[in-house]
Amino acid sequence: MRYRRPLTFLLIAVMAWIPIWQVGAASALALAQSGQATPTGASGTELVVDGERYLLDRQVPINIGALEELTDEAGNPVYAKPDDDPLGALYVPAGEDGQADRYLPQYLDAPDTECPSETVDAGNIEADDGTVYVPAGPEPDLTADVLTEIGSTGEGQTIYAASADQPFDELFASDGGDADLLRYIRLTEEGPPATLPTPQSFAGQEFDVAGGGDGSAEGLTKVGCIGPFPALAEQGEAPFATISLQAGDQVVQYEATEAVDGGQTEEATEPAPTAAEETQPAIQSTDTGTITIQKRFCEVDESDNENANCTGRIQEAEGTTVTFEVREGTEIEGDTVQAIEVEIGEQGGGSQGESTGEELPLGTYS
Image 1 (cartoon, helix red, strand yellow):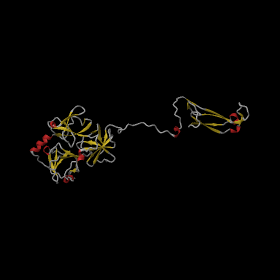
Image 2: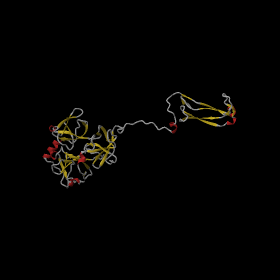
Image 3: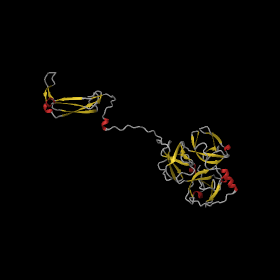
């Protein structure tokens, strides 16, 4: 089900900050309980459970005892909510009581599944100094009482952060109702959302930022989720040479830190034969020889003498060139493998000539 906010909040593009200079005791206590937003990553930036990959997101306060225990591929315990979870997250205890690192699914095998940022209809928030925050989806693991109120909007929305320290990497908006907080993440000058690491893990690979947030999604296909945001690529399956991240209306480009062939095996191809090569016979023998042709011109002997060939030489043939086409095998209709030109010279009084062709593999020719 799509997560929606009141229209009056969705249309907010610029926030007017109302600083809160004093934080009450209750807020200070809540801040101490909330811990750091930065996850410890004790289990690494990626988890694999039942063949599905998950990416480290942030640290949250949660009651591990109320969760269902699972096991990752390394045999370590991980935890999931037993009931419906809008994030589909996994949790790993972070070493402090009540704190856990949250991991979000990458959905590599089901890339059409909505990433958290796609489940909300909300525009960017832009602060007075030009800082842009993009919607990252619902925040079911944090509540206003563990955050610090830092401002409000003209529409009556209350804005929270993990602490009063600036710059704020994340903002959380509430309309005062029972719905989950709406999470926003700051875009960095380099392009990626501030909570994402560099290099970025995805699909078992590492990627470095290759461009700012001015990339294009044209020609790209959604291949999964990087944290709360959609991951895009030219091809549908890993390994990926490049990926892009869709954060709000910005597209951030990444390149794999190790060269890949784009998921395809390169195959060697033979060069196309030239016209001359196409006429050559496919003979595998390594032994070669030559063909020598002798040509004589003479008058035909029409007598009854079976041993006679001619009655005399035709000496006027001197200077004539005769071309003999050599074909493989015994068929005279086969492809020509060589042409031998015989020039009639002074031999035999100008009636005879001889010529030897180029080397050919041993075989039968006609």
